[in-house]
Length: 287
Image (cartoon, rainbow, N blue to C red; front, side, top):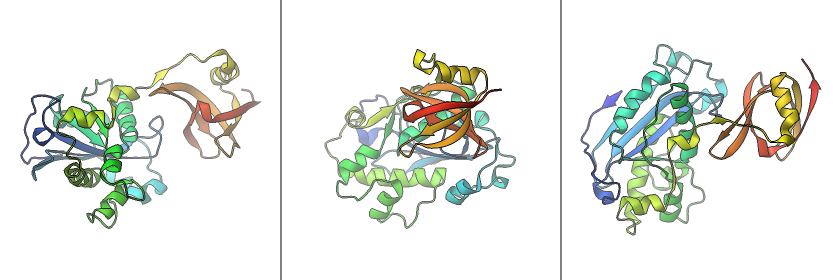
């Protein structure tokens, strides 16, 4: 799980970047929704930008649910791969230990995705997450490489000549992110101190993504009743607003956005829907 190289503590969050510890991390999952899907792989790299040395963390995770074939086609992790692997609540203590000091800076690419899944795991495990600040690397790459066509990690790695194809695995993508960051920071001399870097980035804490039950305003009385009475709805969602049959279960707020968790009849499993993207709904079947 833990591969030891050479690392070290950092005394202050406002220390020079060159002497500060960063932890690039990445996860793979069973799907795209942290409400209904689960983590299957966690990878992380602890490094200093001006050093070639680093420590690594890697662990497959039993998601306690099936991994859809369409998702396996992306990251290559099969249901047989996770048989006998620890569940996420057993992995989190080791991950926390790897993160280490609270002034170590965590970094992920499109960090909201990774943070939302890990926040859900901490909540389900009734475990307090590390308070470390987390930065999303997206803005930094846009600053360092304004000419790139897009800023997917795979494209950044290709543009920099580091990869031909993204692995879509936790540790491999964390290593790629570290290598890309080292090159990007070398092009951004204006960021001498960690606080400057954080101020120029989108930053999060894991607790930003803790989901909480909410009291719905009066205009959602019919939706609340549908949840309470397990009614079936015809739901119109998104730009195309195509109808779908769902059984609503609960409404959550996560990072200032409201979501409906509902069982999608066509898909056969639970999905999440942003409340502000639901154009209308109708009760078609009562229990």
